[in-house]
Structures are given as structure tokens and as C-alpha cells.
Image (cartoon, rainbow, N blue to C red):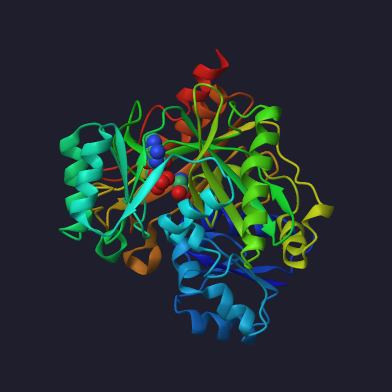
Length: 437
Ligand code: AMP
Ligand code: GLY
């Protein structure tokens, strides 16, 4: 069986690694990762494919008789990769370009939530900077300014002062720092609370919730500093009680699925709701993403015990109501090692030293960690060296009987790895540890 994973980050490494393990009994599985990274290049059974153009990926899938394709990141979904594969009769798991607007346009997403009674912060959308400034003055701070389009995690500014809010409006709408993505902005009320990541698989009609997770978005310890794509994550999220889980499924996930169906665009693929759980126990959707989170995927995949291929086959056949996912009861915690200069201008080419040698051994049932690669590449000397090649470089994910034990194990391994300028938060999981107290 041949499978294709589109993308080249830690999330795709985790998905491809878990797919390989789904088929332990038979060795006849091959997973292509396009374009992949140094980590996927080194795993036994994975093969990198240096292709990113959608028409070429379609051709490859046809020529190689790929059983099905899974899409990791949002960019190819926004470009319509799912539509292109389906038009060519190729199986692919992800949302169509239209359905992906839940992530690719904040204005669409917010209006959709309002139309279908999905709880979210009050907001207004602007294409005129003058009107946006006026609205900021009228609302006061704290307030949140968001670029309408995709901005690789840099599109949201939580402004605590009026000066910051006005600056954010100007940066996006006048100086065009985010290009077209910032031509329109959504300005929404600031919400207090704790964030959780709630990710499901959807087949158009049914959903299968994955394990809950939380990530740390800020660069610095104590959740300070600039927003990033995520500096670490853990699963499960201890705040999600069974009662809260049921409410999220009803008020957010099923409401969104029904809304998409009513609007003529059934949702297929991973659906990620970024939620704020407010101090009074309320649920508010901060954002929808049309993909798995990164680094959430790394910790979720580390805990998945069910056969991922089987789950995806059910998703592609529209029978997700017939399966359940089984999870390792332990906590998984992932620590991100980021490049010098991340998130503004990550430096490439730093040599990574002392990666655990057994990276390629996917067969050890006792192994309680995995080092997932994000921005890495095989460097000089015919790939003997591994070098940094992106903002987030590695995610060291480990299992433990408690959050504390998973944390200790992840840091034990992460601290052995070295590269110049490495940025790593030392406190991933602190909220979950406090929560237990
Ligand atoms: P988003 O891209 O919409 O998920 O926003 C990125 C991050 O900004 C979120 O993960 C939150 O940490 C923060 N954020 C977004 N919207 C709000 C809000 N309404 N209130 C408080 N924080 C927010
Ligand atoms: N970790 C947050 C995201 O993937 O958007």
C-alpha cells in the first residue's frame, strides 16, 4: 500500500510516522511525504518527494497508484488541492477550497459562526483603516486585531493599549506588512480564559473527535512575548471534563458541520476549533483551522493507539460513525526547539548535534518518546549533517504517567540536542500541572 502525506513540518512527520506504524504486521507499506524534511527522510519506510505543485502531486498519485493522500498544512488546502485530486478521481482527506474558508477568511468564519449560533467573540470587519481606527477608539482596550487572510500565525494581535491597537491596524492596512491577508481586518472583543485545541476528523456527515490538547502560543516562558505557531503542546487537556466535551461537540462541532451542510459545502477533513474556556465555564471559538494543529498533532499522534489507516479509510468512506479511536492513557507532552530569530526571521543552516540515534526505530513498543522534525534539512556531506531549515526545528514529544512525568522525559531528551541559537521554553505544561493541584 502506498500513501502520500502533503507537507513538510512536524505535523506531517507525526502523521506519516503513525501511518507507518498502523501497518506493522505487513511490511508492504510505503508513505511518501511531499516535500518532507530531514526527519521524514531518515525514517525507515518514509520517502521524501520533492514536489509541491498540485498538478504534479495529482500526476504522482495517479502514476504510483496512491491509495489515498492526507494534507497537513493549510496553504495547499487554500489552493484547492482537495478539489484537484477529487476531479482526477484520486482519494484525498481534507476540506475543499470552499470549506477551507473556515480558516482562510476570518471574516467568513466569524459570519458563519454568527449565522449558525456558534459562540464566539463579538466583532466587526473593516476594509478601511480610518473606520478601523474609529472602531478601536470607540471599543477601547484590550482588543484583538486580526488579519482576514492567512498569515502563518502572525495575523492576530492582542492589543493591551490603544497605541498597540492603532499600530496593528496601520501595520496590516496601511503598511501592508502581511500583504493581501491584511487588506481586511476583523476586530474582536478580547476574551479572558484558557485556550484549548479541539480537533476532530470529519467525513461530511459524521465526526470522530481526537484526543484533546493545549498548546503554548507565546515565544517566552510564562506565556509572554510574541505569538508563534506553538512552542509546545500536551494531550489531553485536563480542563476538558466529559461534560464540557459534550457541550463542545454539540455547540461547536456539530453546529459547524450542520452549518456547512446547510450552506451546501459538507465539511471533510480535520477540523480544529481553537477555543477559549472563559472563567465562568463558557465556550467561545477563537478560530477554526481546516487542518490539525502543529505541535498538537505530534502529541496527539504519539497517543493514538488505533490504526490510523483504518480511521482514515472510514473518513474517506463516510463511515466515521462506525469507529472509535483508542488513546494511550498517559499524557504526551511536546517541546519545540526553534531556530535563532524565530518567529521574525529564523536563521537557517545551523548544524543540529546530538539527535537521539534511534530516531528511525519505529518498531519499539516500549519507546516512550519520538523526535519529530519540522524545519530541518539534510546538509552538506551528502546529508550526513542535519541543519536547521525553518522557524520551528524539532518537537521532542514524550509520554508519561502524569503531565509532570511526560514533561521531565521530554526535557531530558530535548536538553541533549544542540544547535546554535536554539530557543526552547522550559515551562511547557505548567498550566496543566497547576490545574492538577
Ligand atoms: P487566532 O489566529 O484567531 O487563533 O489568534 C491567535 C491567538 O491570539 C489565539 O491563539 C489567542 O491566544 C489570541 N486571541 C485570539 N483571539 C482572541 C480573543 N478574542 N481574546 C483573547 N485572545 C485572543
Ligand atoms: N498550534 C496552533 C496551530 O497549529 O494553529
